[in-house]
Length: 162
Image: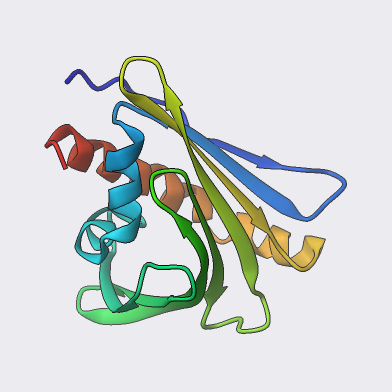
């Protein structure tokens, strides 16, 4: 399978406190979905290249919960947790996403896996946060680097036929 470099769009609506991430992948929805619900695969690609991810809890089903920590040189630098509100195989995931350092800043995220021609998929992630201040903090946290590098690692993983 040939892999094309795809751009990651990160959009912030002026009127509502949301962040939308849009990215195409050279993989079928089934492959991309699996990379989001299989904890061993998820840990391999999520986040920036400078960090490793340790999944500490993972129950990828409607009503399940998840948690992971990011480490740099063996030291934990951030941890996150949430709940799976809806898991619809190969189509959609709705989950909460909380940074442990800001436990009141819960984001509700909806991921949709849109099948495209040629065995490709468009991933859309819509993140709704409490207020514009929370969104500004997320956008200024370096999340763009984590998202972009994470998706590049995901491309590499998918190219191996995962």
